[in-house]
Amino acid sequence: MMQYLIMCRSMTYAQRSAAMLERAGISARVVKAPQGLSSSGCGYGVSLYRRFDEARNLLKKNGLLNGKIFYRDDDEEFREIN
Amino acid sequence: MIYLDNAATTLIKPLTVSRAVLHAMQTMASPGRGAHEPAMKAAETVFLCRREAAELFNVPEPEQIVFTMNATHGLNIAINSLVQPGTKVLVSGYEHNSVTRPLTEKGAEIRVASSPLFDSRGILAAFEKELPWAELVVCTHVSNVFGFILPIYEIAELCHKRGVPLIVDASQAAGVLDVDYSRLGAEFIAMPGHKGLFGPQGTGILICAGECKPLLSGGSGTDSIIQHMPEYLPDRLEAGTHNVCGIAGLLEGIRFLRQKGLKEIFSHETALLMRMFEQLDQVKGLELFTEACRAQSGVLSLRSDRINCEDLASALSDRGVCVRTGLHCAPYAHRSAGTLDSGTVRFSFSPFNTEEEVDACCQFIKDLL
Image 1 (tube, rainbow over the protein chains, first blue to last red):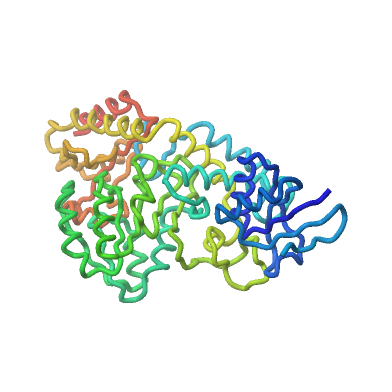
Image 2 (cartoon, chains in turn yellow, blue; image 1 turned 180 degrees about the horizontal axis):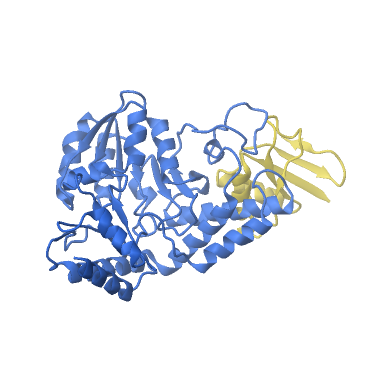
């Protein structure tokens, strides 16, 4: 199943993002991002499997989309969405 | 015991506070320092507290809520962010040392907007007169010695008209009065968690508009390769491990007071103050610092010409009554009220105090005099 990882500025932003998605009925959880996905070291993001486009639009609309976005299928490596 | 030192620390807390502290000690680790369950549980609690506080103080974004050790810590961050040597800072005549000492340490040029006690119009006129000189205003919302409620929203408006940034010390107001960040438009609002918000000692909140300088540098759990503090809040000002247990208690404290309602808390405390005033007003040799006006919270200072303040407080302590005496770390306030030579005995109320406690305390005072 396709996993999406929306990188966030900080833990607090990830929590805000997850809470916002949850309120919209989109299942998402805060995760620590794998090393290498963040150029500046440790980072957090929200992970989700469904309704990605909707989630991205919602976060963008609310000024919470300020990091890179990655996806992977099953056990593949994460790839950045441009 | 009759605990009437709530302006220092509210000792009697809702039971949910101590339960939450213990639960956090037993189940929570460091927020933002891992992805395991105890770390994520801690992170969730910290976030919930940010959100609850943001709602209480009408702050647009939860990341503007920065956790500190106490109000002094928050005020030091605020002053460190905005003051350089020689900065012209206007303060009220009711500031605590947690404002005036850091200003002095930073080499600020301090001027006082002087006014008599409980004179709201006078203090506004003083600010209006001195504001053209000022580059920054630091002002308390409520005097910790006398409970004098300063017209902080009007002072904030004057600052906005002049384009002068404002730091508010909400130590005695938070949890009792409406402290509305969006209405105040202050650069910073600092407050302790352990007074009106019913959190444990070692907790505090600093509300930040944006621009700020860290007082401490260290681990933030994010951007670890970069060798300076992150640019964004709250990480920029929260170096090192959070006081998760304290924040868990603070969350329950805020929930309690939001459920009870600020108006009810204020009414209860001021009713107790009036009850005390009515019983002691006619006692010979006793000077009570109060006014039959709305500009006073649940804090009553007094002094006697028959017994010095320390002896009176000590005698009350022997009878199980806990009060604060001396200068209350606020020499500016005592200078303004003309009590610098004697200090005062301060009685400060909480929602957990009762009329019976006030009556017993008044009787002790009458017996002692």
